[in-house]
Length: 74
Image (cartoon, rainbow, N blue to C red; front, side, top):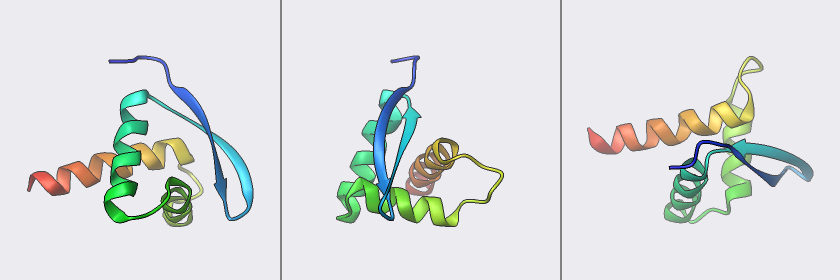
């Protein structure tokens, strides 16, 4: 298990941004996007549009991944 976040660049609606997530979250995020038939940039843009202004993008992605797997466990 990695402990340090890994920074990756994403393009959201034509704008580049960097997001730092732990390797396990990047792996899960990529898997979810692939299962949905979406590029990770498209999924990140979807998450970005749905998040509030008080929540950072990295946190929103982590919560999205967590909820995804929680919903699958039910």
